Length: 422
Ligand SMILES: [Zn+2]
Image (cartoon, rainbow, N blue to C red; front, side, top):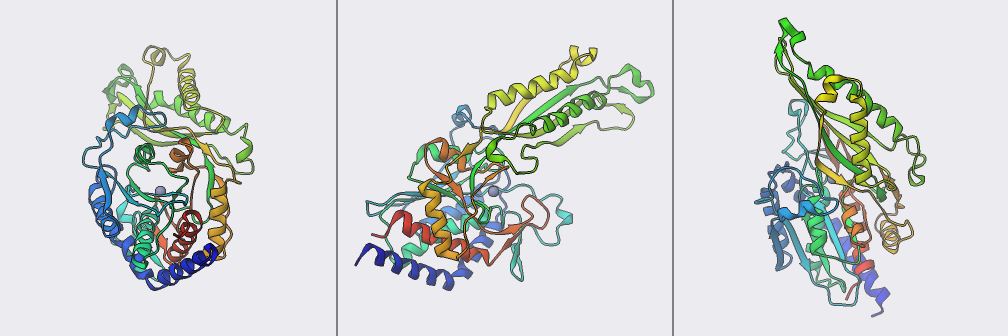
């Protein structure tokens, strides 16, 4: 049988099986959603992932990340020890001769708070019409389910690929990227697909991102004699104004890749904590921020920019000059990445999207990070392709259920084309 015929037969068989087994794919998403997996509580869902993979292959590894990963370039620090919060790797050896592929997905989810604003149980995986509601249903247990489902289909249908297939189910995508960083250092391949919830807008690069904290010291006092204290909230005001100005300044010279995107760089002042009593002058104030930066800037340069900005805001204030704010980095601390839009892997995904769904792929640069960068840093071409949905990181997150077989079909076409059928 010709290679072309083998490929088209395999594609047709896989597409038919996807249509027949869509309920199973969706139930896999539901199983994942019903296992809450916020930072520090990933073990339960990873147990399910490992169990599912064991039904497909004998080569499944459940492994804790080494604390030493934090000293790697582009690592972050979530402050939570890695023990008991494993990554999971599953490998399906190919027959040889084809290109290898990694399928990556993160199982960590952000907090569902404020839970009382949800109209569905965030861990209920409730289905209404064409939507499944739940934290992580869209971002991205949808993609993890597809990463489990496709190898299972190949196994059940007896379709052997030439190239090796590796599944990475990782932690900490939402706060550091350490899960994929560690996985990318253990396994390499000819390409890596992150089935992140970006729909068909596959990123060909994304910005660098840093999380930082600014701790501002004051001096507490009774509000009746407030002038004896130093109000840390008031002292934070010029620093907040300076950071807000930095947000504007960072958008003045837009990197060519990001031209046409409205306000691509965002310095978000996400958390502010201070004070606990109306009649007490607050003695400390903490601001926590996320800032992005263009690929022509390094994390070290961005660190310096943050530090210079904060210190400049203190100039002329005797208290702040004598008690300089302390800046620490406690989460994402990574450069951005880019991949050539003409890269053979992007081309293969474009073809797979057309074969699988008739929808053209729309590659574009992204303003939010995802885990693809770690593979690119290692020289492995990578991008994302995922399900559709809405309200990621928001109340009533939902997954568009018809997009699941669409995702699976494109992945099937990619596997056949990239890894080739033996
Ligand atoms: Zn995600």
